[in-house]
Image 1 (tube, rainbow, N blue to C red):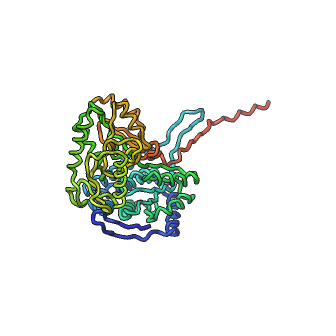
Image 2: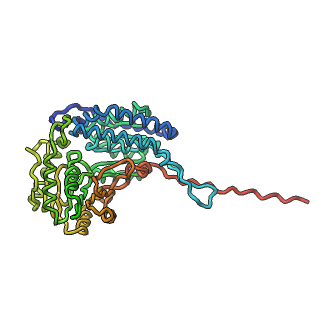
Image 3: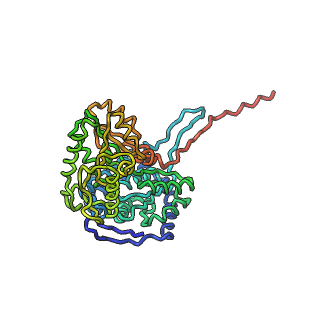
Length: 466
């Protein structure tokens, strides 16, 4: 498998890397296993100092790292800087809060003393995607390292420079080298890594098939997994919504990362009385987005990460149109084999069409008509996915009530769906299981150990011998 930096805007290969052999990979696993025994004994204060330094380095290197993302996967440089800043924020967050999140929890029992201790488990393997090449990794690495675990990163094969840059940041921050290592390997070695007894858990962000394969291997090996998989997020617009704000946010929500985000809004479920006006307004906002060179500060969306991804998205659109969907906004590829994909809108989307059933990982807005609020909830839940959703209504209380009925890991009322270190992140159904971020994320990969100390029994006094 090729491990190379392919620039989707220029079509050039920037750098190629020799993949690690299994022998080389296994040596690194051994080093990480030995490092785990030492790292778990370090204090939270020590780990916190190093994690704060990692945050500083991320901020200092944000321009360089943003440029790297632009070149390797087409992210506009402005968005790349924002991603790096979010990573730094998350490093600081766990540096500040990890000790409290993992403090012993006193439990009242008949014992003299009983509590839950949250203890590190060792090596956590992370299998990560290309779409947010720094953020996806940091949201696993920051809590894992602060918990006293060590991390091995198998990043997507098209972002090797980003993967190595992350390794360098943690090393330069002072973390012992073996506590965080990047493995330049293909997906063929992932199963062997999971089968190694020294690897104690796996976290994966990626496609549904990749998640199923990792979960099956980990299941056979009886290892904990966290999976964050695909999404086809619902964006519900009720008739009483602020239509201008909803339409503008809808366009932003669809265009996040050129449409290549698990939590980008993909299915726009709109009540019938406002459907035509919403389509018109959203179309105007989508057309206002500026494409261009990701290295240009004025660019608002770049190419998709690879030409084959644009080809696949084009096929999904064409098949959906043949199945009865209507094109409301023409865009897409200028020709096959190119990575730039201009935004599109599809309406008259019905069950059985690919647009109804599948995740579209690119800037295609899928419009669904709802009879009323109950019908909108039905349509939102009629999906194999359950990652995020949003509801737009001027009645906040009603929005909150409807949010409780949506099958998703996160629901935002009158706001763009986003991730933040304070709130748990993850999905239900085919969007995966487990949580990242918040206090829940750092507790996914610890041994929640029950400790019970019995009451002391005083020995009976000896009878006095007369």
